[in-house]
Amino acid sequence: MAADTIAAIASGLTYGGIGVIRISGEQAFSVGDQVVRLKGKTLTGSRSHTLHYGFVYDGEEPVDEVLAVVMRGPHSFTGEDTVEIQCHGGPLIMKKILETVIKNGARLAEPGEFSKRAFLSGRLDLSQAEAVMNLIEAQNEFARKASLEQLNGAVSRKVKELREQILYQIAFIEAALDDPEHISTEGYREKLKLLLNPLIHEVQDLIEGAEKGKILSDGIRTVILGRPNAGKSSLLNLLVGEERAIVTEIAGTTRDTLEENVRVGGISLRLIDTAGIRQTDDRVEKIGVERAREQAGKADLIIYVVDSSEPLDENDREILSLLKGKKGLILLNKSDLMPVLTAKEMEREAGQPVIPFSAKEGTGRKELEQRILHLFDVGSIGTNHQVSITNLRHKEALIRARKSLELVEHSIEEEMPEDFYSIDLMDSYRELGLILGEEVEDDLVNEIFSKFCMGK
Image 1 (spheres, rainbow, N blue to C red):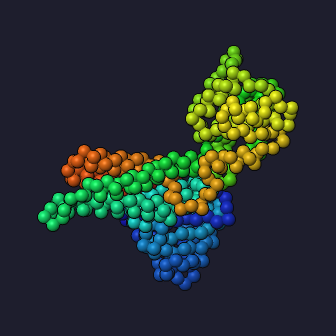
Image 2: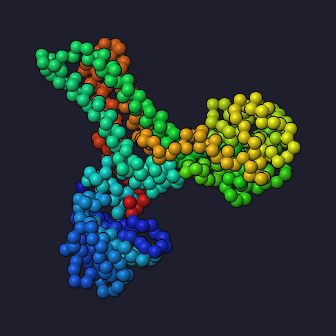
Image 3: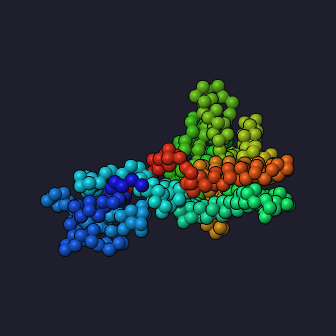
């Protein structure tokens, strides 16, 4: 571990009631004593996890009235001696104190360096360190809860449990190969095959959960489709709660995509309003229609807005084709007008449930939100104990681990020697270890922590 002492603003460089400057490293207390003056005592001589009142000085110039927290390693976030200076929350004051700290022997921390030191000191494994940043960046309740579970070791415990099962089998095979006279492998193939099946299913469950978890953590990419003047932009405005999209009675008003974020039941929707899909000779509108089709292909969820006061035409049938293989909801809009199209007729055409809706009056909104939560199975966020994987790196490692376990299954079916099993089991064991940060290359560690904010 690096022996030098680092410092950074840990509270964000903005206006607020309190600002925090964090110092960590072997010289944290001595640097702190040169900067913070206490009455009748020093930070170096203070007990761990205590709070002290004093003033920050730059030489003989007073800078600010502060509180200083003393945390002795290894019982700190980084595992090192740490001082946190709590000052008044103004950018100028925080910058001045940080400059004074650096002038007295610390250096400016790199992005994520405090968390990196926590990982290197063994205070956190890599999955927990990544959860720190995920928690900071959480945009919805699902992301917050999932990140907190990961920080508290939910992913770590599950991965360690899987690795222990794999390691036991590796140890048995190696021991049997080394001492065949005393350890028999008779019947072991069948036994191992029975053990592998639930193990592969557990890994597969984590992979499938990761696909949903990533969507819910980042926000559900929700594309609004429909013919021109069906009420797509009105729906966007209703869900956002303000007039973000221009709404007129002129068909084809929306020429390009418009994206907004809204929260529904603890999750985020990345709403994308699109140009109305229809055949047109207008070059600009054609581009908008093509972009609508492209967005439909990328969508996690499609909300198809149908004008109930108009009969379906070939444009509607094209939109229905875009819904195939996608999670979709159909809103029969303008239910406040005299309908030409009924919900039952639309259900027959689409083969999917239809929600009577009025973007103008807001009717049907509650049912729409409930249907979205049901589609993505998030009505019980935080009430079950399933581990939530939201990190793409973790998912890729799980996929490789599953593949190695499947190779063991194949070797058993082909009646290959036991040492073949050991090789693939060890590969799976290593891949799962990458999630925790074992045998991870320095370049990958540096890349991960470089994405963190400066004071974390």
